[in-house]
Amino acid sequence: MQIYEFRDSFSVFCRKKLSLYIVAIRVERTAAHHNHPITPMNLYNQTDKSTRMTAFAIILVAVCVTFLPFLGCAPFFTKGEPREAVVALSMLQSGDWILPLSNGDVIPYKPPFLAWCIAVISLVTGGVTEYTSRLPSAIALIAMVMAGYRFWSRRVGIPAAMIGAVVTFTCFEVYRAGFACRVDMVLTAFIVTGMYSLYTWAMERDMSRLPWAAILLLSCGTLTKGPVAIILPLLAVWLTVMLCGHNLWRCTWKMATVAFLALIIPALWYVAAWQRGGQAFLDLAMEENFGRMTGTMSYESHVNPWWYNLVTLIGGLAPYTLMLVIFAVCLLIPQLRHSVKNGLSRWRTADNARAFMFIAPMVVLIFYCFPSSKRSVYLLPMYPFLAMQIGLLALWCARKASGVVKSYTGFICIVAMLTFIVFCLFHIPALTSHHTAGLSADTLQAVSGFMEPASWWKWAVAGISCLVGGIVFVQLFRSGTSTALVGLSAVMIALYMAFGGVYQPAAISYKTDIPMARDIEQIQPDGTIYSYIVSDMMRFFTADFYIGDRIAPFSPTTSPVTGLILIGDDDVHEFHRLYDGKVRLEATVKRWDKKSCDIGQPVTLYRYAIGR
Image (cartoon, rainbow, N blue to C red; front, side, top):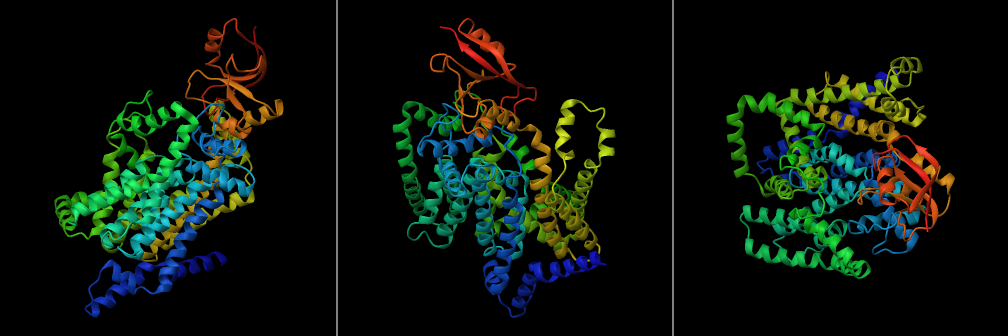
């Protein structure tokens, strides 16, 4: 009985509290009855203040509960996250906030804004952890989503902006970046919010005065990764001004002024870092900012063909890629000619904001087709704009093709329920012992995280995703399409909560080098541990972070006569060849058969001695 009461209460909540789509339609009909022209802006203004505040609060709560509680659940298991986090750790330990050395001798590859954020947060919390290291990315994502909702709700309406906001942070590429201690999400937030601010200044305020907010955003973006944070927003808005027929020459010199002012603060850091790091820093900065764009780097880094961007974009839009496929198969392909003609007509009559919605992501896509170095995270600034287009498409389907929305929502509900069922099956000892008896050691290790006992809150989070999926699935056969859209958002949020808090940590826990770090702490609690890796670009980033940045590269001229050294199985032969007769590996202290997540080899800790 309680289940049915909860289901009915949820249905009422969806229909009467969250279904802002119905509210907007009523406003539109009222305005049409009184012969008032309907535009997104007056639709926004006619919506009562409580509705706008409720919508804002709903999106804010949704994105916060999806990310903030679970940032520390997964350990570091790739070299990228600890490499960024250990820079902040080095700042706090050395007091050098300009150009700290980490991992023994590594100059930071990126400007320090992310490390500054991590260090400041860690000063308050008492130490650098996985949670504090990932928090800047999560805050940047939350700020970008809320800024996007505020920007688009005034131009395309509250319902589309709400759906677009949810789609933004539930696209897998964006979700993954918001959970990672990497510069990409912070950079994306500055680029996208900079675009919003520049568009408002250029297209709606007639470029009066200077856009100081945009200048500060572009400056912070440049301090996060480089001048690309200035180039992309200015180029996107400049093209929008040109294509929408505004004063192009006035816009050009004003944007040149904005670019110059946005470079002042980053230039101060670059000069200070150059004075500290000398020619080595200058060479690294030139290679990372210009060599990567021109294909003149001293080493190959993520070299891919131009169509790689399209493939990663399709994958990054998951799980909404499936909805787009259903839409194309059911609606676009049967009426392809009419759809293309209608689409071109709409483009010619589109308002400036909708034109900007298409121009901005195209600028990002085309810009990153030219460099030989291509990664999926480079395209992150496209996703907020594509998400808004998906939001508008979902509303159109709700009016014209409700079956598409309901089919896709039903599929997501089934996924949410099946993932919970599979998770439960992993915790049945008799079943798991029978089916894992013939598995290889590597496969058994990969699924071991799912078989470990889960705490009560993990069962609660996973169970909620299943419960919400089941309730929404039942309601699909009883309610309208607007409720299906609300239910889809609820299921996506609940599913991602379960993924971030339960499923992903269980899936990747075996990859981390934390066991190695704990053993090293016991063997040598203080002092430097040395390492040898054939590849000059590689370090034991993960283990180094977890033992407090105490692993440094081995050098026979600067290292002590005797000590401990980490060497991978594939690299030990090269070590013997290089230091034959000069350095002896006297004893094996500890060996880890599992491949390191940083260098991809089993690792051994030796005691070495340098012959004199």
